[in-house]
Amino acid sequence: MAIAVNKDTPSPEVVAPTDKILGLNKIADIASRARAHGKKVVMCHGTFDLLHIGHVRHLQTARDFGDMLIVTLTSDRYVNKGPGRPLFNQLLRAEMLAQMEVVDYVGVVDSPDAIMALELIRPNSYVKGQDYKNPEGDVTGKIVAERDAVQRGGGELVFTEEIVYSSSALINQHMNVFEPHLRAHLDELRQQQHASKILGYIENLANARVLIVGETIIDEYCYVAPMAKAAKENIIATRFHDREVFAGGVIATANHAANFCREVDVVTVIGERDSYEDEIRRALLPNVRLHVIRRPAAPTIRKCRFVDPTWLHKLFEVYYIDDAPLTADIDAELCNTIARLAPKADAVISNDFGHGVITQAAVKTLIEHSRFLAVNTQTNSANLGFNLITKYPRADLVCLDALEARLATHDKLSELPDIISKHLPSVIASQRFIITHGPHGCFTYEKGGAVHSIPTFSPKVVDTMGAGDAYLAIAAPLAAMGVTNEIIGFIGNVVGAQKVEIVGHRKSVNKIATLKAINALLK
Image 1 (cartoon, rainbow, N blue to C red):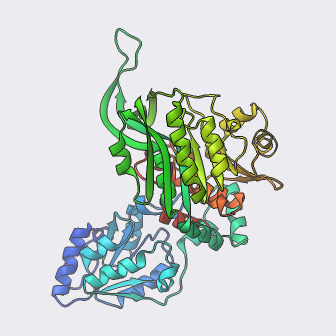
Image 2 (image 1 turned 30 degrees about the horizontal axis):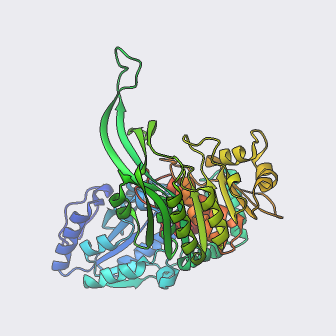
Image 3 (image 1 turned 60 degrees about the vertical axis):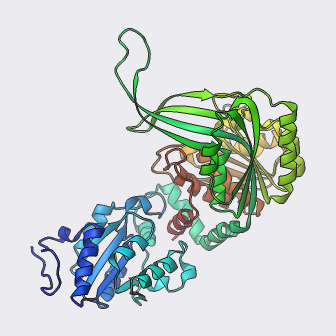
């Protein structure tokens, strides 16, 4: 069925609703010609994941501000509404909007905000709902930047006074997008009105200073396609496609923390041979200070994973590593650097990958000079069974995965609630314990309290590498602030859900995305 188009408005013929869905450059050209003919162009922007009466009234009112209504929506990869969102992909969301007679054109914006679209389209009016009137209520902080973009193009930001509904709240309350145990946990947090408190805790991290100590690791992904078996030998044959090199280990952890905290210091050891120092420094966020100790005649640790690019399946890996004990002079330099920086930090993280950097002298120094010490001793293929939390006499927060906790307590069979509340406290003096458990979420325990099980929020897992380090990066400064382990477990699982959707260390976990995900989950 054909749609009537204003004959005075220069635009292509629209014969079906989906014809309204165009690229941004095409829409910008149509808008420019409309303005040249004296028409007023109006633009709205949002996610529009579940079209409801609030959207309908908002768009109808917006249309009254001009002659042409353009609606743009955020592309799937930039929707930060928590796990399982968007509920509908960008093509379906665009089609839903295009079905509305009041909407003239629909475009998808491949960006986390509307700024790029506003600069292209240059609407006379950019219309937002009344919930955006107060800029402080916008967790993204983008409404001010969008207003400036509109004004640069000669337009104005205006607000509707229509009834406000939340798509996230409607989805959470009326659509079974979560498993029953996860819905129950979120309902409990909502009933206790934790949303504003949790968002406040994260905002308070903006004043925190964190020190992270441990190994720098170069994580290399070699993308190779499996081929047929070698005809004359029993070996794996692959065809090389591409290669990515990431600055991992403490560098990745530091970048996660730096997205939330004011200052991050990193104390690490790298090799003088194959150091990758330039790549490491380029990878760091501006508020991270790097304190490097160089190890002569050794390489910076590099772990090369050979990855099938189709599904990101890791086939095998090769370590380039010298994990011999540090010499006395390098160990002394490491300890002196820790002793100088640790007293200034609100939280110190020992990101201990077990490759020889965290020596017994370093452990002693960390304990003596840290106001708050959070520790993870990682188990990996180079140290299985040898890098245990028992090397630390005490810590203020212990954060381990399930295998690391079982190895430390020599307990293969007990339930994790018993391990975290009974067995771990017997091998290290600490008030707080967290055990991460992959797709099962995490367990948290504070001495004298109950064990809490917090479900995971990760329906989409792309790459699990570094998820525990991202969790630790947010858990440590929150614990140092006095936030309860139960709340830390929830925030940590939200952060972990973001990290497992990132390939390698292509980017770090983002504060704004975390705030938006929490806000959406608890509506």
